Image 1 (cartoon, rainbow, N blue to C red):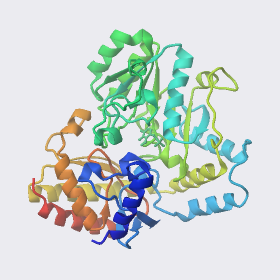
Image 2: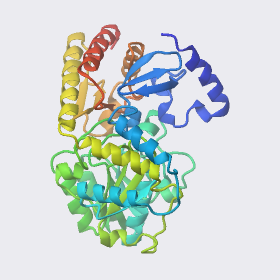
Image 3: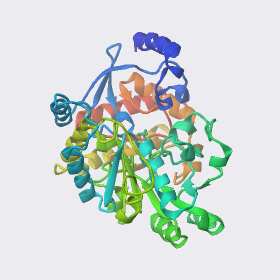
Length: 430
Ligand code: PLP
């Protein structure tokens, strides 16, 4: 495969953009290094790179692109909005309508505030929990990634783990001390932490279904226990649904699992591919936020007309009948075939799938926590990633990430991918 222009652009990028990328998770360091592929255009389920190679996209921009690229509904919404001005610095009707729609679909978000990213949404949700409880500590789960604000970069998932940075440099020890990290899906460890620190804990922060050390669903009863013990200790529960909301179901996974947090953070899909985040929760808690209350949070771009319009168009389109059934059916077909082929070629594989999102771990052990994900073979993943890239199938360049199906993928794309996986497995050396 000719990737000369990507290589050339990477050289130029390295000179002017640190590490050559604007987010570390785009780098190919974890899959053998070298130039990442520079994409030029994307439509539906496909990418075309600067050298004209086509790829089937299973990255979906790390989650948001659930309708595929340049979906007509989203594109029209952006264009119609743009001609009337992209940023006012005043309230707009669109923000109200979008907040109403989100509240209808995720009722625990009685009041909402839009931000520009998932990072901001989670960062502020934590500040709000601290403001509401008057406590400082948070409990989080090992390997869960909640954006790049100081407090949550302690034992964070996919991006930092891929790069082998368990804790980022530049985070004061005094801040790290406020974070207690326990393993996901291990209620005993959570109980221990609550018993030891409970009266100082502002919130237990959790991805209700993990997307950041691959796809890892909660064990039955785990989320109920998080709620029960957090509340007994007088702490709040924050769900980080930045990946999960509207990915598996028309709403948050909280409605799917029937467990409600006190505060929810959203991002990714709700922006239809434009920058967005949102946090919200019980009215009594949200009333702490300025200008109603004493907790400050703001944003020049927050709730901007473009992001809101794109998000609204995306969420409305997802309501079409059969959307989630179709994603699930394609996910099942692909995963069944990958499992079967792995067995045929003697490749150790564990697949965790929920609907149209899944992770292929190169291990024969079940993966229920971060330790399990860490134990998956990164070398084998790198081989797999490179071979599929050659075949025109684009995965996230990390063993800790998920494959995301979109409504733009077709049955032919699935069959093409299965044939590519077979050729890759044939060449792989476990
Ligand atoms: N929370 C989760 C669960 C995420 O997966 C991410 C990003 O991957 C974030 C928060 C941060 O969102 P953003 O990259 O929009 O700041």
